[in-house]
Length: 161
Image (cartoon, rainbow, N blue to C red; front, side, top):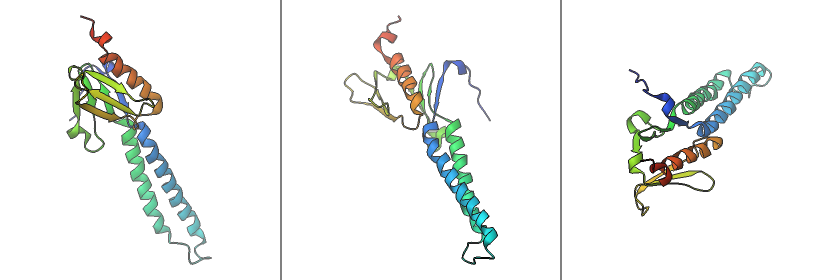
């Protein structure tokens, strides 16, 4: 059963595409190892020490698993900014572990210099809050996320009454 998004034009989705790069590279390396093992198996009758072609199934199978993980990371959300707040999806079991932090819960938002960490403070004294790593998000998207969150939480944005 799938749920339909009521207003998809009012949300910003940020995926783990930056994290998927490692899985894409791993899949490419393993696939090349498997293909090389298959190609060298043609010369097995000349050199007996060349491994059997069935051994190529191991790296090729792992390459398929890594590619599937990379596709999942590229397509599925890590953070979604909605009119209600920020939806945070964990790496494992995102549907069960999703957390919604409403805009009313966030007193202040900060991003460190290299835009690798987003801190959402729940009080003005900065004693409670959430730290979110921004490294899973592509580098060119991090500044957009920081600008959107800080712009929404800043006191100037809240003085529209």
